[in-house]
Amino acid sequence: MTGGLDWPALMRAGIRGIGLRPADFWEMTPAELAFVLGIEGGRLPMDRAALESLAAKYPDQKPGETDG
Image (cartoon, rainbow, N blue to C red; front, side, top):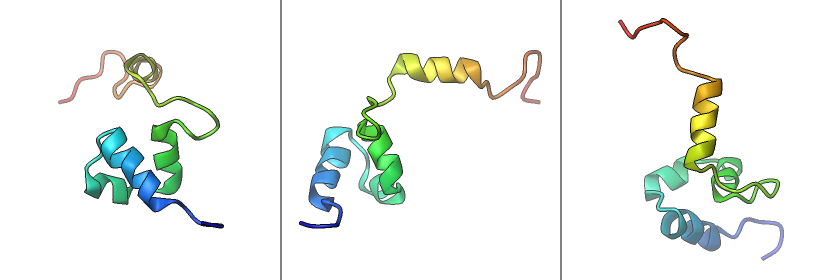
């Protein structure tokens, strides 16, 4: 294969490897898929600690704010 994406390999990695539903796989851009697979710039996929750190850094609500 020259100049294109290896879709069968990407589908195996996304659907079998990390458990994406087919609909979720096809909704992603190649850049998003590369990021979650950890192949973008050599970064590993986001783990729980990284997600919690990101959520703490950028909370959905400001301190003292409520949902209602």
